[in-house]
Amino acid sequence: MNKKLRQHGFTLIELLVAVALIATVLAMVYGSYIATTRSAQACKSRIALSEQGRKTLEQIARHVRCSYAGSVCDNTEDVKAGSDQTQTEPGDRVNYFKGDTDAPDGEVLHLVTTCGLSGEKRATDGLFEVVYRFDKRTSELALSLVRFVAASREAERRDWRVIADEIESIDLAFFDGEQWLGRWDFEDKKELPRAVRIEISGENESFQRYDYSTVAYVSCRDYRAETLVSVDRK
Image (cartoon, helix red, strand yellow):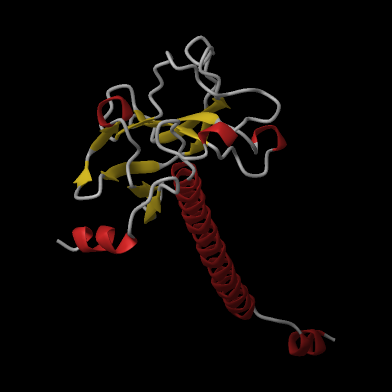
């Protein structure tokens, strides 16, 4: 009887070897799972960061392309904001477009546009006052968009929404037909820029980064794109 038990049993060494093999296999499987999970999370984070940068760039470019100024656009009399009259009176002073990457208050872009926010029924048609504010301390880009009514625009309290975070820098340049400028003020120029170059860079906690740039042409201006390209090559 004892001989049969010894023939079908396992020694302590055999058990230890089996346990060691099982532990090794489990460790390999778990390590592979953890590596795959981390890689998937990093890829997801990179895609989200890149998508945020692309959408932010497209939104700014869309607002710039639809920039409005009563003294520049030929269709001033035809522009309305829904059922509200938004035309300015002759005596009103309106700064239709102002941009400065190094603005002390962080308001890098302030403009009047005929384009609201896509996907929102409350802001899709008419004139809007849009302000972009970049906070270098928090790396956040915030947006304020309100209906443009000259008589009440100064008294209206702004509501800010953060549209992008983890932004490292945002740079703007303004084309006047001959050269790129670092800032633009409609009160001084008395006109809109011909185009705006927008560059956005971002970096998350994992040191993943993106860099996006584009040139948005102001649609209510008459200019030749080849002139812009030739100047940019100098």
